[in-house]
Image (cartoon, rainbow, N blue to C red):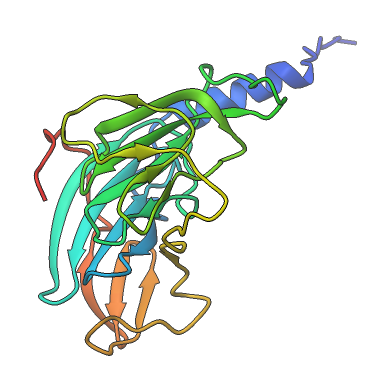
Length: 226
């Protein structure tokens, strides 16, 4: 009788194997792109930001949408980062975008015991930092904008002279409301009165596709003006 030896693997080894397959093995070309769009609307301007998340959920593209003219501007890509597309914030004038991300293997726990993220404020449609806050943000803590247009956060490193003013939060300070719009869970109309929905990487107005970024692939772009 022939004996066959079976290799046993612990849970950490199995997790490492799955991580390698997910990160480094190319997806089959026949696999549909399960891209997802997250929409953030500027309160005081006909401007929106579309965040396109790819299959692997760690590659992001920022797209600026002028809702008056249906002009779409492809911005920069953020590659290999874990980000929650909902926990971002667009300034009231649609000029600045605040987001945070966790880079595998770099983030650490902050003094309060929460898992820390990196925080960034950028100029739409760029991911390039005007302000950067490393490893200080717990559990996807949001960066806010004040009604006066200031960035509201405890402490950030200024990276550009184009950055808006930075202020600390006070109890009576009015903040710009959440800019995220879940268009597929509630009826939402753009300034032209059209019902906006998404389907994967497609943006629809009254059921008609007005923009399709399903086939977008990474392209390095320098920071743009808006």
